[in-house]
Image (cartoon, rainbow, N blue to C red; front, side, top):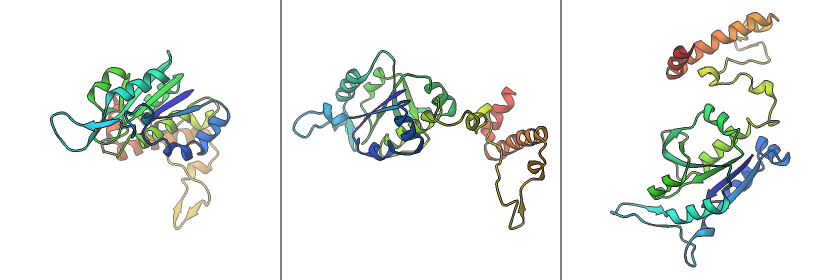
Length: 226
């Protein structure tokens, strides 16, 4: 897979590229990260890419032209173009799985007050990582790269991906390790029994219980689909 990031802050991704799973995937050539500085397409000596907004209002707005020029230079016939914006659809594990099958993902990182609305005509999807505002789209881009990258072939073991939070609209089951008892809190006896059928049943029960308690919104979806 190839991921192209259009950003005003390309240096942010230098360290991220060397991190954990992402670093392993890059070294294995399973993942190519291409970071494009949008100022390459700016105007004038300062390579400006922003301007004041029509109608008045605070802050600067990224112009549509430099982003479209970058899209056209770096896109291929297989490119899926994603605009990162708090106005977008919520990013989910289901979307991450779908995108892990894409050959080329292009992520557009906004900044300042946002991007000229006309950019919406040039993207395939608009995505948000949550209902809050960040300074720019760089951290959301990293979140997406991490979530998608770990799903690529040979990134981590298939066993680790077999049962995770949000599969089947449920949170993951509780997990434990040594010691068996800590300050009066014991590992559930069933996990020490060696009876794999009972362990599976217990874990499923706890997934449902945990989801109902912590994420009733997900639990309602699970109830509709079970």
